[in-house]
Length: 138
Image (cartoon, rainbow, N blue to C red; front, side, top):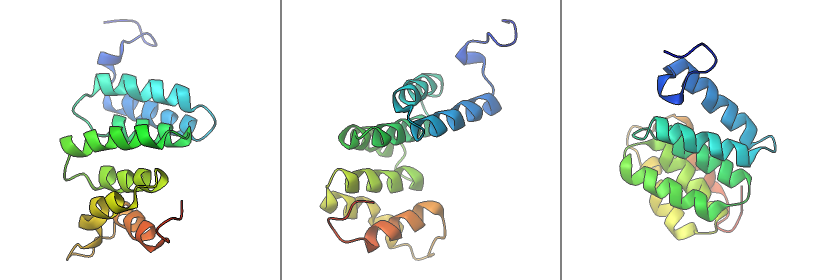
């Protein structure tokens, strides 16, 4: 085991990973998008099966004006996690920013048509995007 403070990424516990993800999100929207993107790429290597590193990376990409790259990252995440509403909603947002409205509507449809009328942050985002004019950017 390595001394505290020098643990390699593979030895991080869930709380430490959550802390790093939170810092990455904060940085993405506080002018440090490039650093946040590198952090989420490292977290993706640490947790390759998880969706959160791609979600975080996509938010950093969106914050730096790289919507097309965010779309590609989130499309890959949705392919790996087809039932993840958060990935689906953020992909809808990225598609809106990238001005790909027709694809956005197809991606968001499962969140908009739920019989159970979900009240989740992903469903609320999907409904807000659907209420915008087709060419409006959030």
